[in-house]
Structures are given as C-alpha cells and as structure tokens.
View 1 (cartoon, helix red, strand yellow):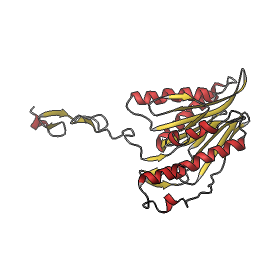
View 2 (cartoon, rainbow, N blue to C red):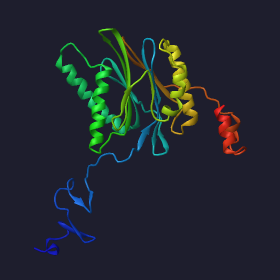
View 3 (cartoon, one colour):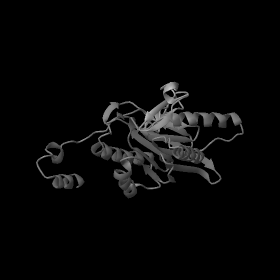
Length: 273
C-alpha cells in the first residue's frame, strides 16, 4: 500500500523524510521530537529561592523565605520549603516546587519502608543525603532532572555521641558536606558572611542572628526574595519548624531613593560599603 493510501494517521512527509507516527500518543514520534502526552519538567515554572543552613552547638538550623515565583512574578507568598524527614533530618529546597513535592513523595516511601523493617534503626541525615544524591544523579542521566538544590541537615546519635550532619545536592547530582551551606543567590551573597562569622560553638540565638543577617542581604539583593521567613532547627531531641515572620528593613539608602542620580559604578560602590 502506498503512503498516500495508508493515510496521514500513519505517515507524514516532513521535508522528504517519512516518519512513522503510528501508535499510542505517548510513544509516537514526529519530525524527530517527542509528542508524549506526559512529559518531564523542561523548565522550572514555580520556583523558590535561597536556603540557608548551618551547624551550631546543639544541632542544625535551616532558614528560607516563603515566596514562590511564577516565572518572574512573586505569585505565592506562603509556601513552606522546609520539611521534616523521618526522626533525625530536615530538608530544604530551592528551585521548582513541584519537583520538590516529588522528592518528598520519594522520601515518604523511603521512611515508610524503613519503619516497616522494624529493626530498631532509623535513617539519619547522612543516609537521606546519600539516597537523594543517587536520585538526582539518576534523573540527570535520564535527561529528566529534578530542578532543585536540596539541603539536608540533622542530628543522630552515633558511636562518638551526637553527630551533626549538613549536606547539599543539586539537580545534576553534585553533592558535598559542609558546616554551613547556602543555595541559589545565597551561594554568592551569604556564603562570604557565613565564612567570616560562623563558629562551631554558636548558640541557637547567635545562629538565628547570623541566619537573619544573611536573609536580609538576600532580601535587598535578590528580586525573588520576600520579607517573610521561616526558620527550623533540629537537635537530638527532635525537629522544630517555627511559624513564618518578617524582619525589620531599611530602604532609605541614597542609592535606593534616587538610583539615577549617580552613575552605575558610583551606586554599586555605595551599596557595597
């Protein structure tokens, strides 16, 4: 039977190349690209910005704002991006929020399976971090990445007593462990502050002040950040996620009030002082 006789539902002449488009809608190809009815996330749409986390004397503290942007629009103002995982861990996420929800679904299944083993042991933050590293790298190798940077922190009793853990993994599977971590713009703007002022013996109150300083810098510099923040901590006694709150801001700097008065170089020099 000729191509014309078989009909357009089976073949298409595209620039001289006949491409078979027969079959189910989720498997057929046309002109070299997929026409799958269910596709992976090609671009992040609803995204959250930086997550700040650091170790302190009693445990790990984590913080971020509660905003989520739809493209460049700050569409959602009460999105919680810090969650508890199992008994010993916290997770915070930057990037695509729907992909973070998928990660949380994976972790729910993991912790449920761990609980069903009933062997007297439970997953700690190091194991959760290792698992997420494999998940992110696996999805990256399938060219179907989860568009997130994930921060995992926690405290679990080990052979040497209470062991604090803080690590990060990004969308391509790059991962590391550190005493303080910031994702997104925080990796450029907050990490220098953390390097200068972080101490291993910080109290919770000192850690909160340092985190708030980083959050304010991000609020002033990052257009995707909002003045509504959430802080969480985890110690050997368990995890606590505090209610969102706002910080006092100051917008009367001359470069903010009249940005066109001076040159760009002068304005940036003033803002950096």
